[in-house]
Length: 221
Image (cartoon, rainbow, N blue to C red):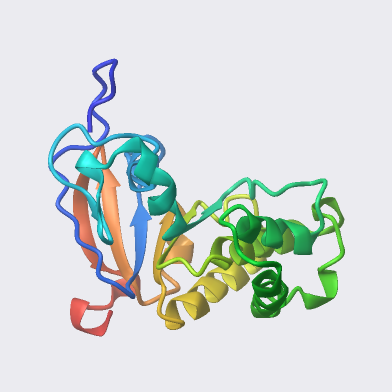
């Protein structure tokens, strides 16, 4: 991946993530993690090689098809990106309304996802009435609302304390056990090492390691 100004963001990347996997993408700032996320979301266009996300071939995906690609992905950002003039319930319901779901479906799905992230009692609260960890859980619920095949979490614990970070990572593990593919982009090695998961390390735009976290072997990952 080469940007218009000539900056090479990713090079010689050969990576396959199977359905239902849980994968950490790690590396220092500027390593290429954000570029990889943008490519998967269709925010940047691949400049060489091939990139597939489910049935979509991103190297030749027309712009008009990008919204359909994004409906298969649930994305959680470090800065939450919630609507602060909407309640918790309304934030999650919005994700369903924009894709044209019926009100009857919304009424069923929103409480189910509030229950999953343990925020049923906060449905009528506004984001600024919640803790940082609770806001991130709302973001998780919203990302799951459209039943995506893949969840991409971009530095999801960057603004949280260690205890809350662990709680949210445990939530992502539970989401993975529901059959979702989970990709967590992070630089927090100490957090990654708590889990027996696949870890892909990027350095200067290249994959330098693809292994199991926490010192485990590939057979036990």
